[in-house]
Length: 84
Image (cartoon, rainbow, N blue to C red; front, side, top):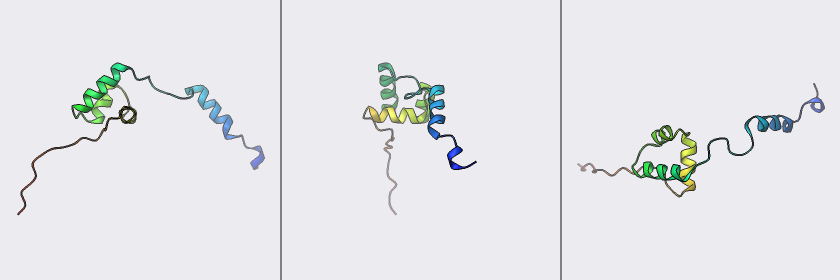
């Protein structure tokens, strides 16, 4: 098969979009979801656990938190070890 006989990639992408739909692939975030996400992040719950509780992927949780201006990095405050 030469280069001119190959199917264009665009037709394959079009088929993929018909199966999954363009744009968003998951559930839309509601105001209640945002409130719950904020409270879980403020409580320093791990992102993996937040995702499991909200039945979302960790990537979706991180993206939404960022879109809402929240950091998903936890801050640990503890005692420093004394130097010798």
